Image (spheres, rainbow, N blue to C red):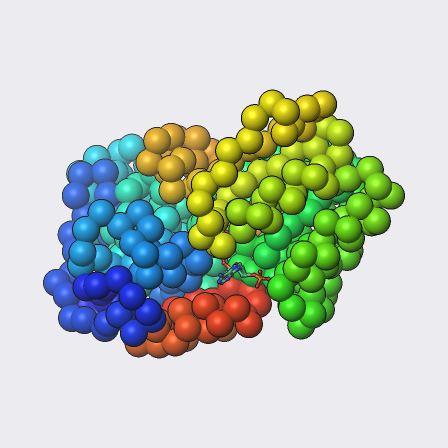
Length: 328
Ligand SMILES: NC(=O)c1ccc[n+]([C@@H]2O[C@H](COP(=O)([O-])OP(=O)(O)OC[C@H]3O[C@@H](n4cnc5c(N)ncnc54)[C@H](OP(=O)(O)O)[C@@H]3O)[C@@H](O)[C@H]2O)c1
């Protein structure tokens, strides 16, 4: 089968197309004939600096949609999954391939009305977005929500889910005016460019501050975020796109009543797979009715994986990118 392999960390050029043996599912695993693979920022970090990569060579790719090819021992009984079924899945590695293997716990049957193309854009984005807003962020009707990276893959869905959850004001932050325009069209009420977000958020909330702030950037942006929270505001950190050193906060930073939470779907899938499964089912139910659009920008053939990484790294892209394998 054709797959992308990384033999050394580096720029997009290290994503090499290779011919590999078709993987077989072990006990508790499922193999999938991949129709489409989603592209995630975490995969760019894995390729460039080895984020969550245990050893080289490795096969990138965290999410796919396709048709089950084979199931390992016990899977039919424990999860009701069977060959021929249309599914979306989180794969710890190896999604950029014609055949991918996933733990049965992170394989989700797709409703008939959800296309495989749509399905490939959902496994990381939807459960993460749902957890950020609801399980961790405790969104309440009328809350103001501020999202960094609002024009990106997860940012586009966060805005829609926040509205769906009853947010009163949905504010976005992006790095360019072109992205601001895109995020407004995707449903954000107001979008700020770069560092102006702090003053903008205060003005937009009448100096009350935002009730829920979702931050995948980290570093100085995260620190500034704390200063624009409402008295009982919640800040949820879910990434470190800036690559700055980890940052700690204590009681003096949070009093009188602010709080900080954190989310990692990869940690959740490894440490609490049953929780992730329940979360994903809640999140997937939202798209079955067509209430959320994953805002897919483009699909590229597998051999253009490096080009897709280059585009996302150029920081000019909006929405979600897919790699096409077998297609629909
Ligand atoms: N914790 C979790 O479970 C989880 C799950 C999924 C995603 N995430 C995080 O969510 C973020 C978005 O992920 P995504 O896959 O949807 O990617 P994406 O948003 O499509 O692309 C990356 C985004 O990061 C922003 N960015 C900031 N600094 C950047 C840099 N140095 N280079 C490139 N982009 C930069 C860009 O927005 P601007 O140019 O507008 O700043 C861009 O929208 C990432 O930080 C990712 O790690 C976390």
